[in-house]
Structure formats: C-alpha cells, structure tokens
Image 1 (cartoon, helix red, strand yellow):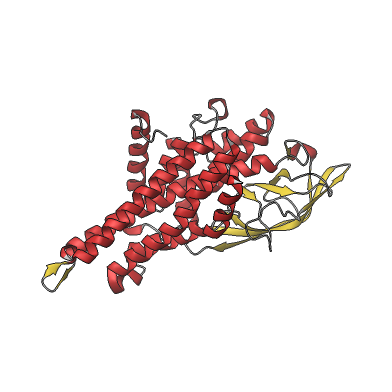
Image 2: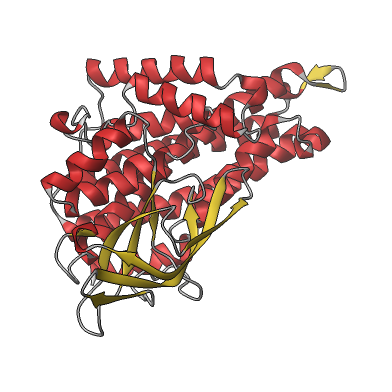
Length: 372
C-alpha cells in the first residue's frame, strides 16, 4: 500500500487545520458546545465544503473519497471538533449514496452539504450490543405506506438531526429496510442525552409512525450490505479521528515535560519519561498507518478485506487510544485529572471512540471471521 499524500491532500489537511485552529481555540477544546455555537460551526464547515466532501458534484459535494475523509477526521480529532461530521456526512451520507434513488439523493444530499439539514442513522436497539442485524423495529405495510414501531438507542446526534435513517424489518423474511423519517413527524419521540465526551446522542421511539412508500431507501429487505459499508466508513473515520486526538495528546504531553520541573530539572530529562513518550510516538504512527489502511480498504471493492482492515484499525484505536490517554494523564500528574487540563478531554473522546460501533473484543472476533 502507498501511504504517501499528494499536493491536494496536503492542501486539504492544511485548510482544515487552519479552520480548526480558528473555530476551536486550544484552551476550549473538549468543552461542551451551546446549540448556537454548534450551529455556527456546522455552517462554517459547510462553507469550507466539508459537509459535502464525499457527495457527488451534482449533489452539492466534491466527490472525494475515504482518504480525504480520513484527513478531515484526523484534523477534527486533533481539535476535538467536528460535531456530527461522522454521524451525518460520513455514515448517513454513505447510506443515502448507496441506497437512495437519484430523486431522493437530490432531495437530501445538497441540503446536507449546505448545512440546511442534518441526518442521523437510527440503527442499534436495546440488547443488541454491537450486532446491528438483530433489528426488532417493525415496518408494517398499509395502504398509506408503512407504519414504524420500535425503539432505537444511542443514535449519535439524534436529538439535533432533521432526518432519521431508520433500519427496520418488513415481515419475518429478508434483511433490513431503511426508511428516511422526518425527526419531527407525529409519533417520533426523541430523548437526547450527553455522552461521556460531552457530545450528544439520543434514544428514539417510533410509536405508529406513518411513513410514505417513497421514503423507503432501496429495495425492501435489501439494505444490509449498504449498512455494513456505511458503518465501516464511519469506523474508518473514527480511527482517523483517534489518530488526530493522540497526535494532540503527544504534543500536550511533550510540552508539559519540557516546561515542568522536578528536582531542579525539566521532566523531559528523565529517561523513563522519554521512553514513555517514545512509546506514545510509536503508537501514533501505528494508528495513522492503520487509519490509512482502513480508509483505502473502504474505497476498495473487496468486502472481506474491508471488514478485516477496518476492524483491525478499530482494535488498535480502542486499545492504543485508551493506553496512550491514560499514560498522558499520568505524566501530567494531578493536574491531568482536572477539567482545565486538555488531556482529560482527549482521554474521554478516545474512550468513547473505543466503544462506538464495536469495542476491541468485538472487532477481534470480526477480524477472525473475515479470515475464515
């Protein structure tokens, strides 16, 4: 695999880094956003072209691939920013691109790219753990279309989404079917909550929600493959975000060791701490390499290879992210446990990334299954 970046990649990365440095000042990174501030940053991301990055040009995007998404996610991770970028642009956008008709795409993708609407994927349910295929939400066909009944949990940014892409079962046979549901439709009950890292998620209940037939995405019972790809695209982006967060942690820790003194000398002079920083730097390079491999696999056409590499990257992000975060907190001493110290905010984000869409143990089993 060729991991080298071309001039366009470097220009994109530098532009996003300048954006993040302006919108996410270092001393405020990780702090909870107000709704007004979140909306302002979301509009600014649209003006920069980030919200339509993977969409086709005639759908309001720039037709970029997973490598470009990786570069953006990495810079957003470095700044602890991005809001619903992974949930809406990457995951929901990929699902719409693969399942929606051209008319449906024209209805929603340009609006998403311009920040006029935000989308979220309602996939997981209580008791599913990470096995998203155990869908119990039902879609019953009626003369008016379909009636949705069920409950979804941990819908990322579900309480700020305008459009919910809901996975449901139509009868006992076949796979999942995805419906595009207005988040404010009668019978949709959204309960938002804060996550560990200060972001938002929601539990969503569908109480006899009437959905017209033209809101079905793709063929009935044939959405499983598209959901699988959309999840892998989101996981690859999260792995890149984890690499960016670790890069920031390494910079914060190295600066702390250079300036903090103990026994009359900077902490950076102590060899044992030098070794720990070296381990962090090695872990960062591993994360970057695996995030790039996962992104390239998402853009490739080999399903087994994509699953194997994306899961391998997620295992590394889960394990190394937690390990490096805890090491950074420890090397900061007591101040590493305070909200004023940025390392704790990065640690929380890395721990959440480690659990989203499957923890290390779950993805290790997926790697093994992909090899069989």
